[in-house]
Length: 523
Image (cartoon, rainbow, N blue to C red; front, side, top):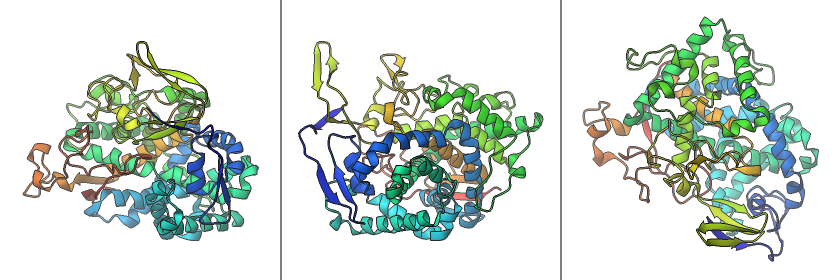
């Protein structure tokens, strides 16, 4: 942890948003994110932060574990349509671009509604969003926005789209529409709030999905991938034997483009999720079991149906909507563990917080450092996730069956949100990510979708004859160099994946270079 400065004696600063006439007042005595939200999203502090807590509570209520199955079915349906349009029967593609092209419209439609997406066009919104995201971190810095024309243009495009759709009533009973109905005090700055929600819903889930899928394509992790596929098949087989209807065959799309809540098997999932996480709080402590071995890693629904010794080399096959959504919502599944482990090893470089009271932080026996109320502190999740005191054994190794974050031999259950494999990625305490459960489901579902709909292999894993070989057989002259950091392994000891971008420190790290995959459509 690094002590940055103290904001107790710093005066408020008023600037003007580069995209509109909104005055942005930044008061260092308020939450640590205030300056950041003002400069990036143009959110006036005196209008936004008095209702910040109500917004977080409303978002948690909209995205509770009990509601995840219905959101999952909406995502699944949209991803099917986008993949049919984007990926042909077979070929070579950049994995990150494919994930962007499929997940962006699916996620936007699921949260913001089809009317918003259709009004402004996927292409325009997607281009503007990724230009906004690329300049996001620099825009939060003191560098004047006049020197960041691409960011300003992208933000203006997105804000104008939100203004038009807000005035036209496009958001209706969507997630964001219902959220803003509960906090009417924010209606005057609704376009800026919607921009912040758009960034929060996509900026981390897209790179998280990339790493979640890319790690499973590595030769060293094929056993994990096969176990996930077997679990998905078993989940479907179990549903058929118990007579649970397939919601995919029963759903109908309503005129506004929304998919109704799932029935049958997904209702069971909703009940199970609600029981496991009343009020969305208990689930924050749920961990993927630390037990070792293939059987221990497979989800409960899969354990009874498949014998790994007699399973075929590739257990892919058609999986129903219900089975994919059920597995993606199950936070104890191996699929969830693989997603959590991927974001752990590609965690943000820094997270900034503000001390809410005076305290003495112990450093060693008899030593401590004084922290005053209002001091700004920087914590490095990436550094912590590679510390053997917190993650054992071998923190730089990709191991989705490992236990959660540990401290002095015990799990950190006293701070909500940080005891799982994902550690500090989603933050902790009062201001932890309000959409965590939705994000975990979204990433897991997208990874499962790609695994079950496409046969994929990394182009970097082809040998000199064009055959898919082991990590040891790969021509290393064509590989990316290992990460030049204190943790060169970081889940990819053979350097088959692109390096993570180290210049950007906020959020899940994006890949620094393209990652080509060979794919063949299965469904």
